[in-house]
Length: 212
Image 1 (cartoon, one colour):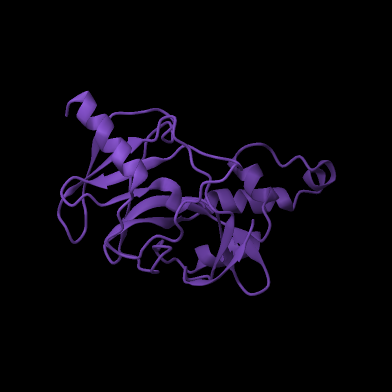
Image 2 (tube, one colour):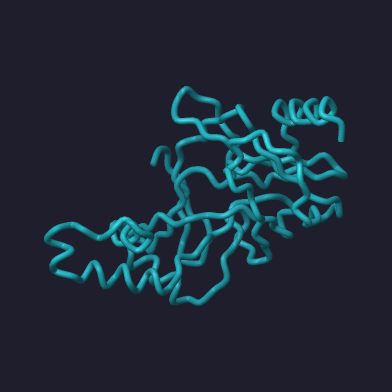
């Protein structure tokens, strides 16, 4: 693709994102608050486009009394036929080690849980909720429809901060058959909505609230 044609294509998609189905959790909101770079995933055949901002915000599992802020990953849902946020489970070994550090008298006294993934998890609230989810031994689900028929996407190493050339993801757009491509937003940045999405232990959305 010629540089001018590619630039025009990107400019058009930054102005108008097409959604063939109502599968996005929230449209990105432009604000003067914290802004982030992002990636655009596009179908070469039908022109469908979505951004990595579908994973932005706070997503929590709730058992009715406690909440745990869990991680997400970008994915394609065959049920929604679009790009979605998908659960990313904590590693059981990391979870076990985090629980051990929480039980250490010395670490509690000094509040020195470490700066690695285990330490960050040990500082997290509602660790018991994450343990309940892992104990179910279920597959991660689409955070839009709750289906387990999802496949994670490989994103860009820089998180979209560079104006990277369009490249193929090697994955077809469900319901269309066109190949999905990805590229970074470069200097364009967006401020996602500050919203907390609440899910039960099975990954079904049960509510939302404004703010984090």
